[in-house]
Amino acid sequence: MTILLSSYVLAQANSVNTASALQSVGLREYIDTFDGYSFKYPKNWIQVRGANADIFFRDPFILDENLSLELSSPSSSNYKSIEDLGPPEVAGKNVLKQYLTEFMSTRLGVRRESSILSTSSRVADDGKMYYQVEVNIKSYANNNELAVMPQDRVARLEWDRHYLSVLGVENNQLYVLRLQVPEKVFVEEEIDLRQILDSFRVNKVIA
Image (cartoon, rainbow, N blue to C red; front, top):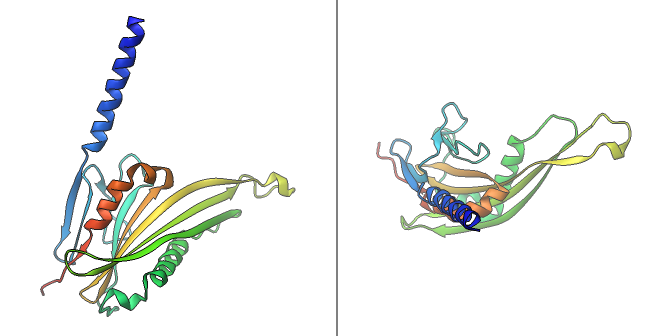
């Protein structure tokens, strides 16, 4: 009984230490004065070079969990305010359409299911309005697309992801902060992820 109790206490202590380690990661602020934006991101995330974004960070252990910032070209855009995108509902449809275009697959038997979970607007402490869009996308693939009989082509879930985007306008440009996270991980990290979304700011660039 003493041995079992000691093992239980040790296991509980290890569990607490692991939880504390996760909670102590904290957030670090990234500021880009040249392009005019800032946001917070988890301290243990790493920056990835060469990604198709102005800046890209990802979790070193959960590769499907990442954050990126994209902005429109100053020479080809002339946004005056976030309302140029229409209401949040319209912006949400365009955001989802963009995601589905990026994830388009030429593989046989691949099917995507998507839904807009929420769209909203908020005025931050900088006085600017931001749009927030949340979508879910699931990817299914047949395990044997070349099978003759339909019952042998069984669709399986490849991935199930939660996408969160915050949109802002400044310097005649559209800024989009994008978070990607597996749906099951989102449930565990929702509070931290929403802190990241709320931290996003666009700033006037002084030429």
